[in-house]
Length: 327
Image (cartoon, rainbow, N blue to C red):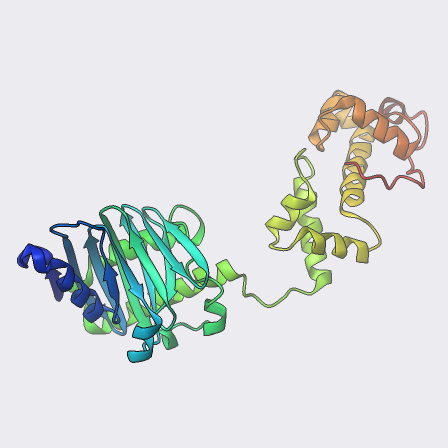
């Protein structure tokens, strides 16, 4: 890496002031505070660039870095920073939010607004800094997700975190032109992660969303724990909006699930190829683990018991008044 500064080369009494100047020069002007009685603070910062993207490896002792309103007024800088914890732990505060970071986790923050990044114990982190204009998301949109933890262990974050760590080790091997392309790819990945976090996709028409939800529910009918909260979470909507969608179709979430489960059970009971399968097994296949409850619900819906339906003693047709809040 082309940039290197370390406190080991500085007298112990001057290390805190030296570190303040190091981080301010590498990023944007920052204030740094250190634990009371600290003696011999140790820090190491190395870095380089990939086109417009600054990439820094920071190995630091306990301290806190502050971007204050006064510093912003004196030295404005419209940059975004990404902090990725390699080891240790850290807490990032901005916009009234607090992101607690563990190894592999990362968060984005905005140098044009106050923030604090604090470490209570020695830590190492990867820091990316780049102009806000390089990110295709609008600033007001990004402001909704600053100082929120993006896990490096799952989802898109689980892909990005190891990629960034690997990339930081290859800075000296990347040619300038390749560096520009790589920086663009990194920022595209980051945009994808933030967009996923924000769910910034265009709102889906209610009718299309209803069809997508019913297809999801159809595939999950065998899950006894299927409920409105799970369905809403899977589609990034509130349970209130979920109920509104089904109400607009003249039904309810519970009624729709119940109707589909019972219809599948009725078909299986009437299927000659499944006559060897116990009624309780058919019920369990479609989410009814309590055989007695299933039998009562089936009779209330079709007017006959499951065994009578299987025996063909009566036509299984839904009763009219079956909209009860049970599944």
